Image 1 (cartoon, rainbow, N blue to C red):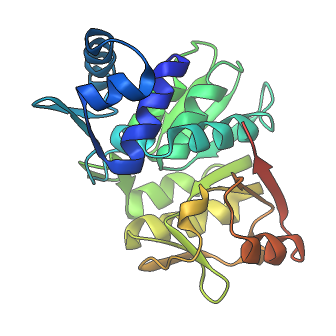
Image 2 (image 1 turned 180 degrees about the vertical axis):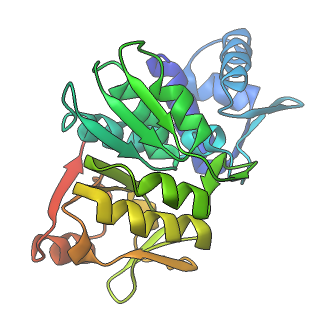
Length: 249
C-alpha cells in the first residue's frame, strides 16, 4: 500500500464515506487514479465501493476495521513487531491492530505464531519458515474468531514468550474490556500463559467500557498506543507498573 492509498483510507475513516470527486481534490490526483485505488483497496477488504465513491462499514470484519485510523494502527503494529525475535513462540489475538502486527512479524522468520483468529493465521503464514497454529473452537463467522472450551483446551498445552491482545475499551475503574464474552474468557487464559503481555490499542478505545472484562492493568507488561492518547490516561499509565509505548509512525 502506497502513501496516497494510506491517506485515502485516513480520509475515509474520518468520515466513513467520501465521493470520488472529493477524494480526487483532497489527494490532488485524477478521478481515474482514485477509482483505481478504490478498486484495489476493495479487493483487499478495506472498503466497499458505492455509486460515486466508497464507504467503510461498521462491522466486526477485521479487514474493514483495519481501514479505520489505519496510519495510527500501523504505527502501533510496527512498534510491537520490534519486540518479536526469530525463534520465539508468540500468541496474536484478534483485532485490527493485531492483524497488521501479524503481517509485520510474518517476515521475521522461524517463529511459532499461535492465534484463535483465521484471518490473522493467514496473515502470519506469509513466510514458510514460520509455524502457524490456528487453535480450534466455535467459529464466529464475521470476526473469524475461534472461541469456547476447545480453544481453551488447546491453550492449556502451550506457553508463550509474548502475547499480543486487542481490546475494545479501557477505563481506570474497569480495566481493559471487550465486546464479546467468549473472546474475553479466552483472553483471560491467554494472559495467564504469556511470559510478557502486550495490549495493542489505538487511542480511540480509552474512556470506553465494553461488555466483558479482559484484564486489570496489573496483569499486563506493555501498552502500545498512538500519540492521541488522552493526557489523563498517559499520566495514569506512566504512574503504573506498565511500560507505556507511544507509537509515532
